[in-house]
Length: 471
Image (cartoon, rainbow, N blue to C red; front, side):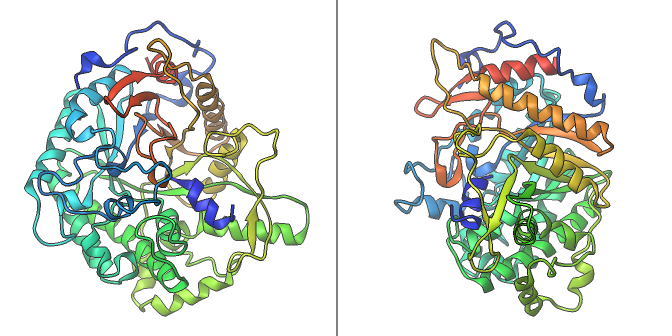
């Protein structure tokens, strides 16, 4: 997350007792979509990210991240909010995990905060950061919640960015040290791991357009960061597999099924170019297919950053690929440099979320089937959800639009599964309304409502719907 900004560049365009609505009667009949339809071994969970929920941005030895720096600059975030407190998960995790369990979810995807563990990015370990994650992991397991760890969800230590960040080849060594430390410290209790969250987003937004932290821009920085991220996702996978017995290792990609606006060669080429940027740029190198130069020739410039040994080091056979998809993309030709493609805005009659994203359940089916053509063992929907204008009225959030969204998207996940795609899990984005990057606190993606002033949680009707579906 957040794909709105990504496509904007590409297309120009405490206590548990105080949590509310935990034991209300069912608000929606979920019998039409049954948990058993997906199989007994299907993973049901929620996805979160450290910077978006933890808060405690400078407590107990945590170092500065690029997002701490970014949000301190006025104008970078639309509503001038930040992640200094976020949802205060750092202090409220015991109550939040109990609330999560009450909604019948058995899997919790979180991310480690790199600067909370290694304040300088490398070297000295912050033992208080290690202690926090130990307590949180143990609390999850005690509740019967399986922790799924994401190594990197965008909060790069600022000390590493000061040395070039992802555009510096030294990143491979820095990241390897971090991956080794996390997998050794926590691998005795965590089986499920993901390496990178949406590398297409953090490289494009952070190092090409400069719209996200660390606000760098330029073709050289973008291409070098892409290559180093590809090497790191493979290196991280190898390290985890080596350190964690019986590990289940994946990585996640932001995805959007692309379609041409018109049936013409020019429109088809535009769609192919967006497909490279949105869907193919990071998975194909890991599969030994190399970078997709043919459809997007400017990528050939990445060759200057490739060392001879990199061709083998890019490859890693993941146990699963995380597909993170929210909408489809309709494209048309454009004069935009490099990709020469533009996203067509949703038709004025189309159903859209508060982010302006078209609600397109068929697009979920299509992107799953597209990724299932790759030679990968499993696909997991590691993020999917929607922001709508939520209103708390008399202790209730009646978010029927979100329930409808989840139902329709899940029906298409099931359709893809029945048509042969090996989809083994679904993680809703997200658990509690959180800090949504440069959009701030306004977009509410959670199935639990958060009052950012009091940090009081109220389960939305969509959370109750999941409770009944999974019960």
